[in-house]
Image (cartoon, rainbow, N blue to C red; front, side):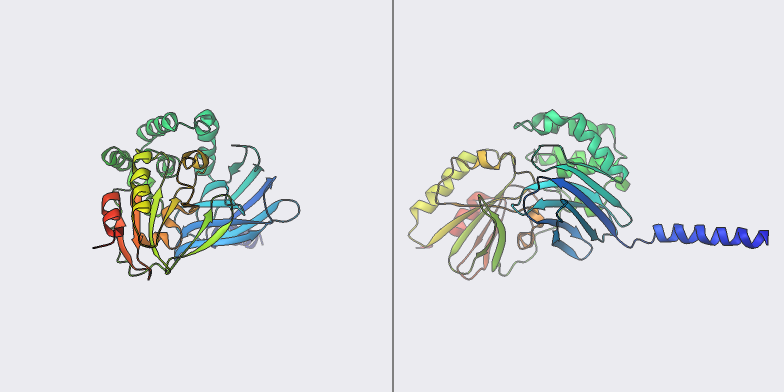
Amino acid sequence: MKIRQILIIVIVALTAVLTSCSGDGFKIDGNIAAIKGTMVRVVFDGDSGIVDELVNVDNKVHFTYEGESAQPVLVSILDMNGNQLMTVVAVNGDHIKMKGDAGKAMSIKAKGSKVNEDWQLFRDEHKAFYTDPNPSRLDAAIEKYVREHPADMLSTVLLMADYSNYTDADKVGKLLNSIQAEARPESLTRAFLGNPMGHKNPSVPRLMTLTLVKHGGDFEEIKLTDQMTLISLWANPQDDRNTKMQKLRELSEGTDTQFRIIDVLAEADTLRWHQTIASDPKSWQHYWAPGGPLEQGIQMLGINTMPWYAVTDSTGLVTYSGPSLEQAIKAATPRP
């Protein structure tokens, strides 16, 4: 009888272990005060491509999302105005809990896995850097952390999600490559804006529509099959933005062809968005891609650095997709 009882205990224990490690999915619970709207948007690069789902928020400002990813991924949670609430790391088996106030910067906290709790600790310790309009101090702190923690997945997360200066590709590449392979899974690095390991651009025959958040508004479906369009994608800080915008202004004002420019912020952080575009021409359309380079439609452009430019003709055919503004302008300039 005693042996039988021991066997039962062992079987129950094994069942519990197998159940907890079965990889059925991950779960995110949120309690966010002052949240705008009755739903939240969840965006991440899952096992089968980009996941972009709406989740109900109850009258107690609580929501629950259940997803699946066999490898660690960055999951962005946004309100219905397109405002970033928080980004967390999730993988099958995780139960992440978020709590805070959407109306108070840096107040939303996450717990439920080591990498998220370490990330939260880093945010708390460098709160002043995160709220500083100049990202240089935060970038320096991230560089220091990466150099000192090559075996820590948080190094990859920080470099991908919170780092700003991707202009020095060699420097960024060295930082990324200094992280041990086990701590930089491909599921995280494939979304990296400055990823030197990025794949070559895929063939993009046509881009018919884009659905993005319009500045000062809500999601809007942009039809790309009615006129020539130059799409300017960028992330803060954008070096020489004024010079580049002047070149685009001259293009838009100097052509007789029906032509438009769509300016797209392609990163999660919108804190500096309003200030950056304040001096742009009022006729330009400004949008935000919450999923960044992985946003539906935009991911087809094969972006692996910022800024990035794409030109489509009046049928949606992509005639240029790449990092050169000069090449984009050439593709958009009517031939005599």
